[in-house]
Every structure is written in C-alpha cells, then in structure tokens.
Length: 265
Image 1 (tube, rainbow, N blue to C red):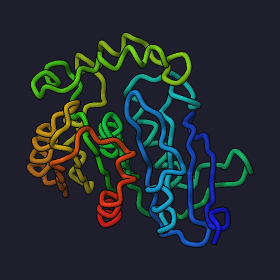
Image 2 (image 1 turned 120 degrees about the horizontal axis):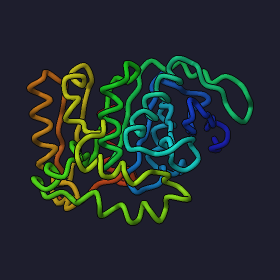
Image 3 (image 1 turned 90 degrees about the vertical axis):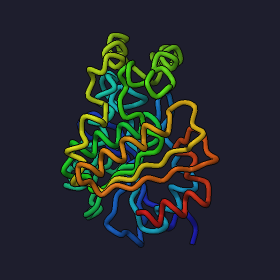
C-alpha cells in the first residue's frame, strides 16, 4: 500500500502553537507521541524513518513548534517550550483542535500521550509532563536537568552561552527571544529545570537515555536525576549507551534504538 493511502496529516494551530500531526488512516492505537527538538535545532522531518515506523504501527505522531520559534506565535522564552508541548497534548487529547487545511475537527480518540525529547527537548518534555494531566509517559534523551550556571559547571556541561551566538543569528528567522531571558536561564530562575519537578513526575512513567561519551551534557547528571526520581517513587528507568556521544532525536533512526523505543512504548 502506497504511503499516501494510509498516511494522514493534520496541521493545527492551538493556542498559538503550530503543529503537524501524522496518523494512520487505517490503524490507530489511541496513543499520541509528541516530539521536542533541541536548542538550537529544527523540528524533526516528517519523513524520518522512526516517525514513519511509529505511524505505521498505529501511533499518532505530533511535531509542535515551540512558541516563538519557526511558525508558532509569540516570543520564545525557554519556559514556553514546555507550555507548547503541554497545550498541544491537551488540545489533541480533548479533541479541541481544528485542521488548518480542511477546517475539520481533529479527532483521533487519544487515550495515552507520550512525550519524547532530546537535549534541550529532553528538559522540555520532563517539565511539560510534570505540568500536564494529559501526559502519561516521557522519554528524555540526554536532558539538561538544571540550567543554572553552578549546576552546569558542577557536571562539566557545555555552557548555555555557547549556543547563544548561533541562536542570535537565527533569532530573526526561527528563534525569537530576548537576551535577558538567557541571563535568567543561567541564574536558574526560569521554569525549565526538571529538578524542580521530581515530585510531580512521580505519577508518570519516565525513561532516561544518555550516551556515556556525551561531552555536552554529562551522563552522570541523568544518573543522579534517575535516583532522585526513584526516591520520590517514580516509575523510572535509565539506559546508558557506552559508545554514544550527545544524542538527538535523529538517533532514533538507528534500527537498534528504534527497536528499543518501540519496545518501551
């Protein structure tokens, strides 16, 4: 069967967040997966192998664009990346969205929502899951668990400032932010630090994946976060990959990781 025969697509704008939703016209399992990209970074391509594989298996897959980035509304302030995932999760699960192309309601009968994000996106999905009643499970890949300068230095993580030059160059086109927010991020004053939400995450199913050769985000921060989650009674699991460096969503195109993902879902 040709791709066009089974692959359905919705384009929505819900509370300012633009998102593409892919679904299987003939086989849906009531499960939605929302993806969160890194910083600086671009939303995943809908043609990525792992996305197509998930949709074939009956998952609906959503790719939201954070508020203030790409074609979503407003200004990006780091915190509202998590808000973007949370509102799309609730909008789709509660059947409140409308397809921009056909003007028809988006109705996918979603019963279970999983968030998957990598790097900055890993932080986003953990915070969004903690804040949203609509989210059931979360996979955070190489997440930063606290962006305060002291925390980053303690683990030897890559400085947030190192990405700001590139973000500044992209600002007019894709990432629209105020530099004062960078200072607040470094001071740990923005609500995008998963460490502050361990208590809320105890009601979620959480998986952490991290490469042990990661030079951007030390894998030990994920190890410590995992044990903290377990202390709070969270249904958490940790997978460390000895040969992998900093992992992005694109790594899910790897067949072994793809199989591992599908088994976890």
